[in-house]
Image (cartoon, rainbow, N blue to C red; front, top):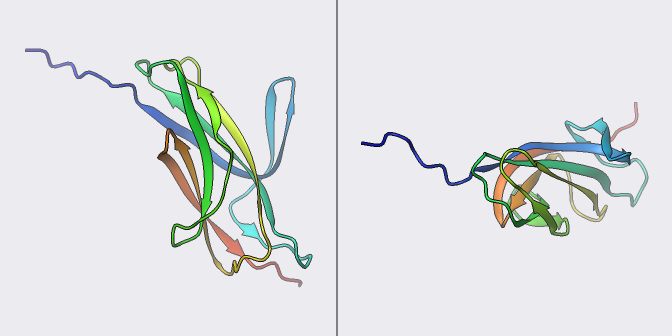
Length: 141
């Protein structure tokens, strides 16, 4: 009797990070201002701007080949507010993780009060990771 289980090539999103901005130099990405909440702009008519970094990694059995990845932002009811373009990513076992960075500009005309914004990382139309980030109204002290 064979007790070994056969792995079917698991792929996970091992990082889903929101930041104020990012920069790339010599193939290295730097995220600036990691966010744990979003604050509405003090400037009338300005929306919410941020970037999302996602890292996808496969186990040793993950087959190579092209896959499609994207990032979505949704409200609490699951309605898509904005989505990134689809990125072509290539995974080949655990040796070659794939990363994407998407910039978002949520329009100011949306009724965003004290609520949650959901950010989801999808690979081949399957949500692999999601996080909720609170939206706060910016105020003057």
